[in-house]
Image (cartoon, rainbow, N blue to C red):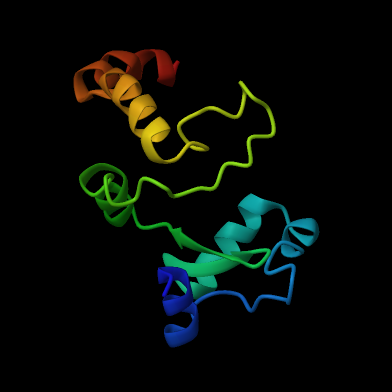
Length: 126
């Protein structure tokens, strides 16, 4: 069973979805950033929503995000489904999965080493 379904069904953590639409209609009523903050206050830092009929696990806990994205990245390679709307522009790290995701991640990872991030900090702050 999907982790999102487990969280929603067992712990009932997340907004109640509508058939077919899931929680997508909420985005038309409230802006996505405001909705994310509102849901986090109501359901905590880990909860489930539905994008249509597809369950999505929302994680807003920094240590758990680090665990998922850095330490256990090989377990979570297919985090997003890519519908390939554009043959070039849709090919990025967030949208890719499987071997393409691993290839892009291995190219991008050295750019974000702690040493390089420290060098970029002054440019980011100013």
